[in-house]
Every structure is written in C-alpha cells, then in structure tokens.
Image (tube, rainbow, N blue to C red; front, side, top):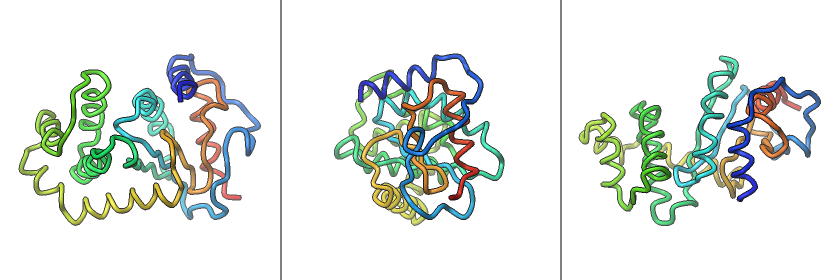
Length: 202
C-alpha cells in the first residue's frame, strides 16, 4: 500500500511526458473479463476514506477532461473502507450524484477526512458537509433514502462484488481491462494507457 501511495504521488508530480507505446497485457493492464462493454466506458472504484484515492484526484480530473466524448466515465464508491461508515459514504456519493453536486461534495469530503481530519461518524455529519457546501438540508433529506439513491447504492455494491474489487483506487476500462498504475511513469502516460484501452475490445 505504501508503494502504491508513493507511485500515485509520483504520478501527480512528474511532468507530463509523451505517451508510451506498446502497452502490454499482464504488464500495463489485466484482462478481468472476456466480454467488453458495448460502448467505451471507464469506471473508477474509490473511497472517500482512501488516501491513495485522494492523491489520485488530480489525475482523475485530467483523465475526465481528456477522454473522447463518446466514453462514459463512471465513479463507483466502495463500502469496504471506513468500517460502519463505509456504506454511509457510498450513500453520500450516491446522493451527490443524484443531486448533481459531486463537483462540490467530493472535494469537500476528501478535504474533511484527509486535510482537516474531521471525524465523520454519522449521517448527520455527512449531511452537514452537504449543507456547508450549498445543498439544502431538505434536498439532502429527500434524496438520502430515495428510490434513486437506493438503486445507485445497490448498483455500486454490485459492481464492487462483480469485479471483485479488493483495493482502491482501481480503474476498469470497457468492463474488461484493469489498469496497472504501477506500470507507468507519468500522469500523461497513465491517461494515454486508459485512452488506448477504451479503443480495445478483444
């Protein structure tokens, strides 16, 4: 885990380099399913509690901007970190998605946990972060146990199980390829690896 964190920080800090060529299965990525998704897709598995995911945020932001328009980008919060609050954080991310406020709430929660070191011990603590960042308490309350949020929570939990995710951050491309972040030397090379994989089907 320490090596991964060092790698992620290095990716954030190393100047962008020209894309590497000759990406290889078993080195740069692993095939985790035989069947690819019908349409190109990038799925990131992450957790607000994960310091590696926090360090990975600048790369994810750059990746989202750099992906072709036809590529669906999907984030999937996992529940296996954070103890009893793990599932509540999955729900918090789902609420942010449904209310279309992830751009405000995701940085705020990461900051609260990893910079301010604030204890987040209940749904009320999460609700306060939403309120502090411009979401009305009424909107949070109406969304948190809604059918839409429950459905998104169930889907994220299912994705975590189906892809057998045991560590984060993990990026799956086209539902078939798992990216190996330790195999690249810069953020630019990482992004180009993902962009290469979205063009692959076989």
